[in-house]
Image 1 (tube, rainbow, N blue to C red):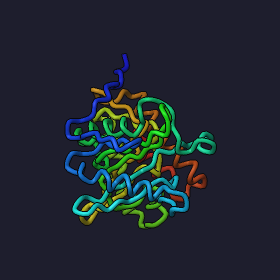
Image 2 (image 1 turned 90 degrees about the vertical axis):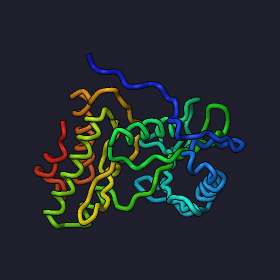
Image 3 (image 1 turned 60 degrees about the vertical axis):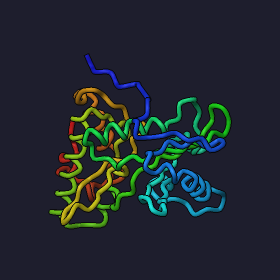
Image 4 (image 1 turned 45 degrees about the horizontal axis):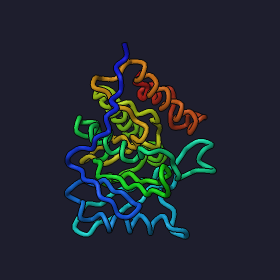
Length: 249
C-alpha cells in the first residue's frame, strides 16, 4: 500500500501570523518586526507600472530588509492555459502560499536542499479569493536551464548534473514529492569552489512520513525529463548521457 501524504497544515512554532487589514502574513518570528516593510515592498513591486519580476514567469522579487536577511519573494501564478484569464488570482479558503511554508519548512528541517523558508503573505481580495507570495531566504545562482546554456565545460556540466541528481534523490529519500519538477526550479548555487543544486517551488509538493514510493519517484523523474526535452528538443545541452544522470526513477 502506498503511504498517504501528510494533510496537517499547522504552521511550525517558529512562525507567527499577523493580520494587516486584508493582508495576512506568516513570518519567521525573528523577522516579524519587518512585516509592515515586507507588505509595503510587495505592494509596490506588484503595483501597475512596476518593473516586472524575474524568473520563469516574471513572478520573483528580491527584498532587502534593513537589519534583516535578504528575501526572495515569489508571487503565486498559474501555469498552463489557466494563467491567461486568472494568472495571479486563486480561489479557496486555504491559501497555497501558507501550505508551501509548512511543507518547505518540514523539508528544510529534514535536510532537503531547499531555500530556507521565511514566510508568506496572502492578500484576500474577497472571501475565498486571494493573491499570495512565498518568501524564502535569497540564495545566489541561476536555474539549471540557464546554467547549462552559460557554462560549456563538460566536466563542470557533469558535476552540476550529478549535484542535481543528488538533490533530487535526497528529496525523495526524505519523503517529499515535488509534483512540478523542471529545469526552472533547480537552482545551481556556488558552494566554495564547487556548485550545489537547490530545489525551489514546493507550492504543489506533498510530504510523506516515509521515503517516496517508487511510482512517485518515477513521476517526478518523468516530469523533469519531459521539461528537458521540451526546452531542448535538439538535445544540444541534454543529450542521452545527461538525461540518464537526471533520470532518478
